[in-house]
Image (cartoon, rainbow, N blue to C red; front, side):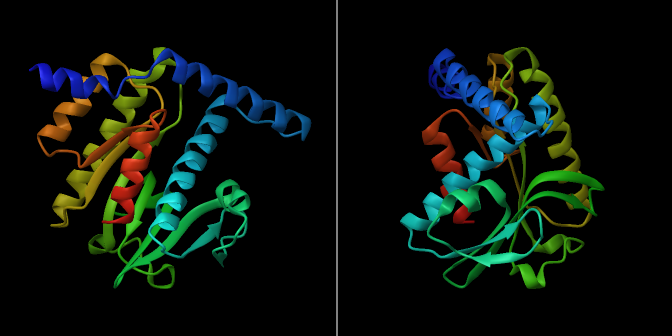
Length: 227
């Protein structure tokens, strides 16, 4: 019981992490305001969450010596790896890499026909050119990414994500497929940390990470790159 308590507590945000995250959001909000672009806090938090995960994945691929391609969110076009990763991190909503003989394509914010809902993160076992989101067997993993940092709304974010992940598992079970499911959140409180840990222990969910914990972000990025 003590080990379980110590492990699930690692999911919970520290006050320092939340303070740092708020500062980043304020800086980003100022940048949008100066550019004359109107965005909501939720949009900023979502975009920052995607950027942080993309940064970690690119770092994992770089350390492993694996090249990648990235999809521009504005044009939908795929581009080769480039030295300046700032643009990639800012604009990418898809990544492709090859690990050994395995092709992997990660797409952000995709409507999955089988589930009939938008899913935050979908990992496929194919090249982008051959990707067919209607094929249940092409999915390796599906995940929910929640960038909201307000502790008061953390449980609601988790409930939304948990419901989405449950729908995913049921839909794929009907198709006789069993892809991995995972959760990445920026605000995780004690009650939801317990539920997350229980799902991991029971094998219901494959992986989870706190977006404010660098080690956990690195760990789940490594996990995604090696599925």
